[in-house]
Length: 115
Image (cartoon, rainbow, N blue to C red; front, side, top):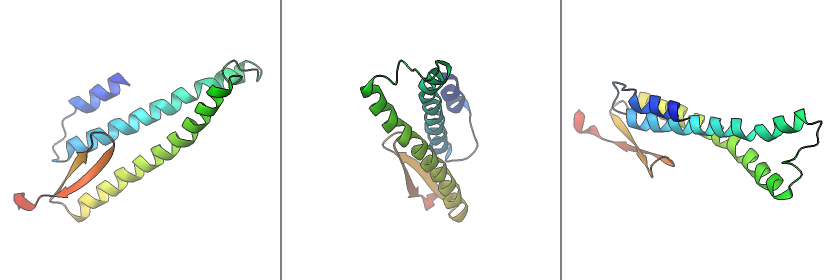
């Protein structure tokens, strides 16, 4: 995960919206990494003849089920946000996208000063 984050930070794209898309790609990568991590207990359960150590703990099961329901939906939302952002840039080419609230909410601002 660190290496992917470093790649997105060091990659310099010529577009003016590179900060927005670098952050969006970083969040998508982190979400995919977390999805892979949440599969570890399932793999452990499959290799232990369905007698899992982790899934025998009720608190772990409750937390895992919530995380397992939220992460795939979040990944689909983020990919949709990336597609919408690209469409927005195609329709309004002089708009600059800037991320609001760090990595959480992508925001849109039009700056026509460069016209």
